[in-house]
Image (cartoon, rainbow, N blue to C red; front, top):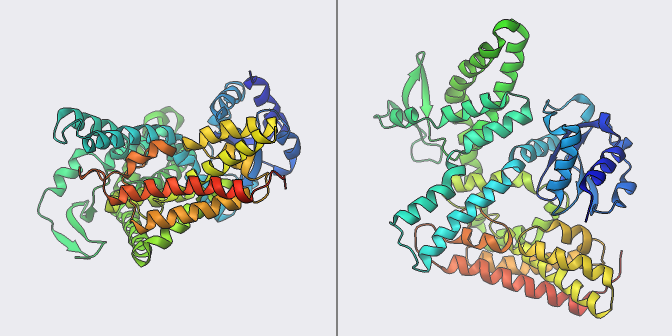
Length: 471
């Protein structure tokens, strides 16, 4: 059994020691370090550690790929060093470029939510599956309660994102949650029930209405439930306000006066400026993605299915998550990145072929790596297969890209749509069922057929053309 405490201590020592670590987070398979000096890290030595699959530097982060045990390794490190509390904003020493900083922000905001996002998505998707098979009625209490559980995170996402964004920007987490809660407070809905005083951008994706004013300033009220972009911008502003407030407010009243100043300045500005502008940006992004899809649904299917794992390889896939979530919020589904599930099964097929070839050739070490990697890939965690199997062997990743692209052609042809950000791998399939109760339609069949074709084709390509030759 792996000693997580020992592995964690070894990793910290080899990344340059405790003093070289600015922040530490983790995602599904990786430890994500922000280091003061990347040059101090001994990358080759870390790669040789038992329990480490690979190391890469991406988006300004030093990423140590662990696999399924990442939570245990992170827990051991955090218990000893408590790096996760180093929530100060990025310092000049980190020398991040704009894109790296952007990806780092999105990663820190969304990574902590992946587990609960998947859990609620599985529950919501499963309830739709139960309706599709006629096991429960769409107007039954059982369905409504399951939908409530499954939709809880997305409905209150401004509160959850307010918390994680506040941690990233160095704002008091509860202030971030309060900002998010204000955006979806029932009073906003009450105001929006009134007759609008003024409507602008009528009959466009940016149509908005003025329902009331704040200190004689008109407010374009919008429905922020399920939104993510406005709260990220609002918490960023809140972090700047809090920093200034701490500088000038006396210590004796800081406890309550600092958050009061933050809320009184940030929330009105969120309603007056940040919310509308960020919402329009989100609608514009959704409009552009739909234009791409309408230009060619097959092209979008091919691109997302063929190249998604390349983004995973470099740890940049989190930067694309807001596109999918934004589309679901604005138009009710994601079609541009929906076929990315196909890429998972392309990797699964190739990994399975490598395992079978290794077994036939009595290459026990390769077989022992490929077997658990194929299982984790089947359930949506592809990093063990990518770093432990596909990348080391000649052309393996290429076959996965080809198989994914062909499977994506099929799902794109059928116009596959993703309605819920739910489970991973095989558990993601219910997320492709239309929530209107129409059951298993051709769009759903498209993703199923695409995944099956990608896995079978990936398997056959490597069995026929692949060789167990390391690069």
